[in-house]
Every structure is written in C-alpha cells, then in structure tokens.
Length: 169
Image 1 (cartoon, rainbow, N blue to C red):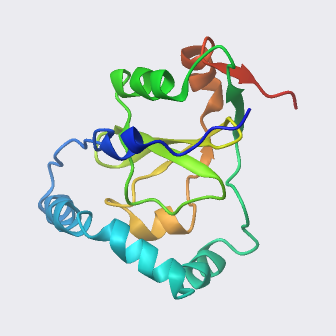
Image 2 (image 1 turned 90 degrees about the vertical axis):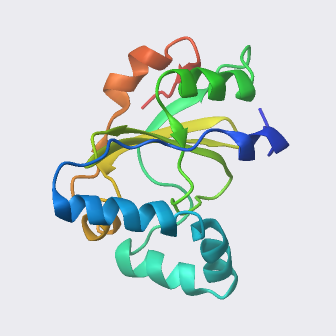
C-alpha cells in the first residue's frame, strides 16, 4: 500500500487543548497559541539548514526514521481521508508542532488536559504509530527528552480495530 500526500491534509482541524488552571500554564498556553502559528515555517527552515537534525540527535540520540510503537497498517479497504475524519471525530486534531518522521503524511494528537497527549502518525506506506507523552506546550523539555514517553497502542487498538490491521510482533 502506498499513500500520498493529499491537499486536504493541510485542512485538518488543529488540535485543541484544554485551557489550564494555573497561571504558569496559562502563560505557556498563550505563548504556544502565538508560536504555533509560525512553527511549521520555522521547522522547515531548521530542517533545510540542518538545525533540525542537530536537535533530534541532541534529544533523541540514534533516532532515525520513525518513532517507536507501531500499531499496524491502515486497512486496505479504508481510505486515508476516511480514517483521518474518523480520528478527528474521536477528538484528534492536526499536530502542527511536531517534528516530521520519515514518510509521515499525517500527525494527529488527542490531548488529555493541558499536560498529556496521545500522538498518532500515519505514514505513506500505511503504517500507523502512536505514543503517549507530555505535551510540548506544558513540558517542552520532558517532551523532547521523551520523559513519560510510552506505548499507547493497547488502549487505541480497540478504537482502531476496524481501521488498522494490527502488526505482528
């Protein structure tokens, strides 16, 4: 299966985050509301200048290609667009402030309050990967250092059972 980048992907709704209660987190929230508008351009420039690779090596030594936690592949009887629409209906939104993995077409997340998120990626070969982590907005350094980074596939496999053919370990 080979999927391709489609124009409608850029129109997926943005991820929404719960407004935090603490004053410190409210400051972080508003910083990211402004900063995230510029982030896709800054990320592209950083990658083209090689700066992105430096950050990835600094915070994720040895990382290449794709992050861990493969769930499976998109069911061949389903379309990428329908799958993305299903995920949006389940509370996922476009995660513009994430680094791009090799072959990534779509990066979506579902937040849990201001602090945590399920982060799901769909790739051009149909692979679907996800993990649970701190949001970059609340804990940017924990997020980059992968503190609390863990597999969320057991809880999502049930949700995605009609959409994703499970990987075989």
